[in-house]
Image (tube, rainbow, N blue to C red):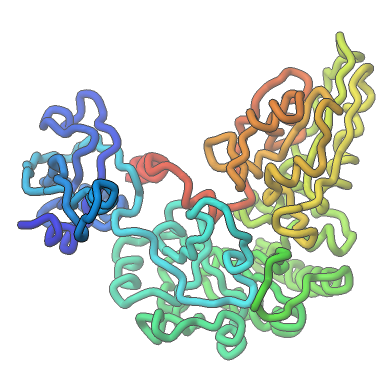
Length: 500
């Protein structure tokens, strides 16, 4: 079997690590090897891998890639041409071996959770954020992902329009529940007009029928979202959508989020953002539904995002109204969750040395944060300024904190003007100190000549970061799709082990 034939027929999964003392280690598996098959079947992702292992007895086929030879891709006229035209060939996967496990984890850690690549979006939505991205960011941020497997593993929202019959059957057979679905509207004609799916990318015409899909997935719990576009799917259309979703027993809840725009909408449809009147009308409608659902079903079912309350100038609901914060990463309850743990009661009367602190945040959250940190201003020697940072990367219309970049802070902060700059943890790439534009906190420390740290997931943690220099250990919310594409494969593997 040639390397090209192997790669066409299989989805070799590079192995990142091998657990000490595991069956894989005893069988001689090493990091750098690849998994080819389990029980004679190719596996496309970590879910399929775990599904095969769940049978109890499994045979794993492993390949050890050989050193790839150099191949000439053209005719070299000079030594420089020769160097340029010599490329690495596809590695040979002919050196294979197998080992068996019986009701035991093999002990493999993979480089990625998806072995066959991310499933791409079949839509061209008027409000797609990827289409509004400026140039120059890392490649993962331009991937138009719409992958039901990532929805199950990480809670990213998918539209379902790119599913095949095999995908649907797999979701049902493997009980990939819950899933997170972008509905936007239950009106089929309006949904098609808003999402504009590419017919050549739609593999199954039935997949674009949102009501049929929700009903076919009746055994799967669905968390849904409605991205509202003023004048399109709001007002009476919103009522229709909420009424339909609430009628389906497998729909657990619906989040309602206003459209997010950037300053980079060249050759895109004209749409506008929500104003105060729009937001107030939306909340008034949703509050009617929420009261009705709470009385009849014991749940409010539909949850407006924080942004709607801020835009409407209305207070955030109390903690209990978020019913456990099931969709924090969708901007529903993030501020209330942040405020739930207040500042510590045993605040010092004064600091041993004066300290000036700047809390950088987005335009939308600045006023709320300024009120929240007022108790810290009673500490002697501590000067705190909440600075609303304008988004110079995505445009002033982008007001959320999670999309601030190093460039934004460079425009807003002068070197040496404070002792400590706190940046929102939502601005950082998952598991790193890198912002969306790959600016590191170390770079900012050197440029600003001050300490720069991520803040906390709660107000109490933020206070500890300021007073004790504690690093944030909370979850990072706000850019779910981007974070998903950057998360390490072991996160998914660990979740699957916990569910096995």
